Image 1 (cartoon, rainbow, N blue to C red):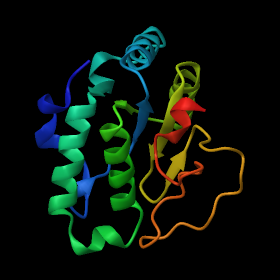
Image 2 (cartoon, rainbow, N blue to C red):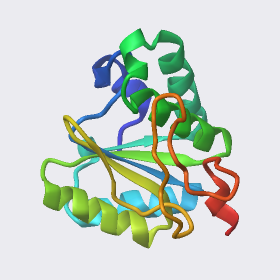
Image 3 (cartoon, one colour):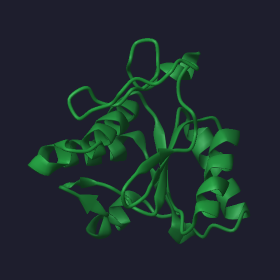
Image 4 (cartoon, rainbow, N blue to C red):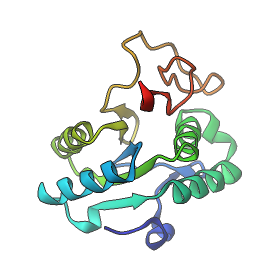
Length: 166
């Protein structure tokens, strides 16, 4: 499993922010769950080259750099809001896996592992849409998201990471 520093020159971006098209970004409240999920993915046939692990510190540094260099077009879609959501989770100590999903079937396999290991989020980055694979929140209807309003985290406070203790 490679770390983000080994792949920094080839990080996929859109409008100056991290957008890993063809990958699933998964966040975990504990390092133990992230390690368990990475091992389960390897057991399911994913290679070390397809699974990248990010510590909270590494994701926080990446998110801060992305926010600093984001171009004006980044605020048109949800890319910048997702970077901010990842930053908030990282600031709360979350660990991340970025897993290559070469097909919808592979994305669903990743989602299954993510659920088994208590993932907070699992987002499949397509060319035009970013699909939530692990349902967040408390069962309340999702409210409209926008670049100005940000993402609907579907937590009581409206902040990422609040589902950890519920």
